[in-house]
Length: 170
Length: 180
Image (tube, rainbow over all chains, first blue to last red):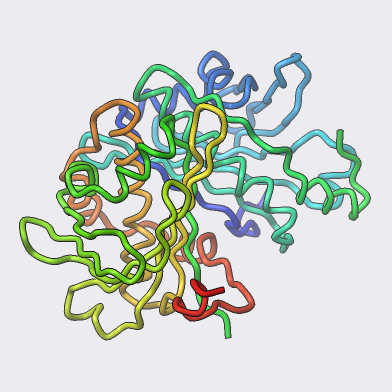
């Protein structure tokens, strides 16, 4: 896969009082991710070409991908494809990378969601509202030991846009 | 013609009232805003000013003061090179979501490619992360964070450009927007 064709469309930067190793562990372990990622469990085979899977709370694989870059504890890039029929075919693959940079005693975590074609603001609205909630909760978990309990509205704007493109959503 | 707009959202385990106090109290801002202390009576039309160790850093006037839901003010950095840029506007929206508050910072009326736009794109994530840490854990982020980050090469400015600029068809003048 040629990742040069992907352009960043959502970038979220957050500063966390934790070590790069702790942030890396939180991004790559099921135990951590269940707490801050709405109950979803990340399972990743940490080598280039390894599988990246996110299991929904009921165990079903919800997101499937592949590790593209793996440089612990600095950078992880994966394909991040939601398992909805026709989604990949119509929107192409989604590329997500997390970059962890020490900034004094804290860490700057930068999440980038990239795509290989232009996407509408309606389609991107799901990620724009979801990532800040997920990463805010990750920061709380690492700094206080407690993830956030956030009441999220369903991403109606994105779901309507997907439906209009003929993509079936749950 | 559209102008760039910077939007940053986070979720904080606190009440809207405490968050409002953190945004408007000099004692609070001095702790998490890396030493910058804010002063104002927070009445619409009143001036406000941030100062660090007595030296003014940002000033402007209050456009919206609707505690604990919405606060907006004009933004004029006090550094000589930023003074030549047009006055921009900052809006804080506080929305309770269960046990947490969704905080959205919108900075608009920015000059594309200007110094203010560059500064605030890097600055807001630091300030808001430190505010969140203070309210949740009692400890802000270290005061040397800004200098530690400034010492590094700025990462991928084109990334910031692409992600944070959300062009809007029309952004009203600050004064008009408040009346509307």
